[in-house]
Image (tube, rainbow, N blue to C red):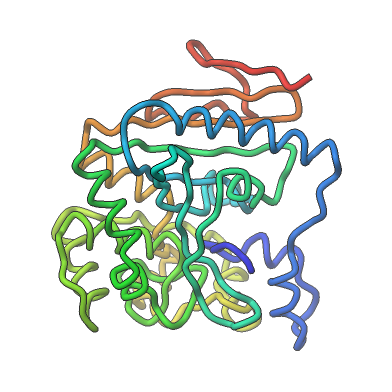
Length: 298
């Protein structure tokens, strides 16, 4: 199992020359954690769980920094819908790529498991966007409705799927289309993805082009599994700016549509956990800024 990867940079850094083993390399990327790293991430997850457990809201947009995409100025790579159960515990519902089945699936995961899906156990970020009650309830009901959630699942996964294409899908695009189905009150049907994307366009969802900044990376689709270019418009390929759904584009859309939404960023380094409120990003390296709450790990 692997979470969605918006672009191929980190994969390219680890791949050997093209071979039949590339798909296995992609799927076996998880690194074993040391006892100290596990302890740090579990303590970090406890703070995330505490923040989610604050009163109010039955659903939230929950994103994590997974792969290092800093070369693209991207902090978050993977988004999910977090929902509060009747017991008060939070679960994240997300798209993942099943390596065993070679297809995308919908997967529920607890907070600790979601937090541990990171490439760097020494530095990590979680973003929680709390939705107003009506929007949260609609998102929760849609995400838990199997007919809706599975009806929006594409048959083929692409890490860098075009945001307005039907050929492929990545994890963040599934979340975008789920929110469209929920907030647009869309009926299920074979064309629900097309209608969800039309609703997103009409509602002002406009992912900014990711500057790939390297012709070499544009060739990734020829030798990196789960990366494609054939769904992107020719002009975007020519300009090397790919319109891909990312957690940041989802958050911008939520803020624009529901200004009362509240954002909390929780991060950790090897020394501390920092809880940062607001729409401005937390400091690089998870250093504390004015008004931030700090929990020491040592």
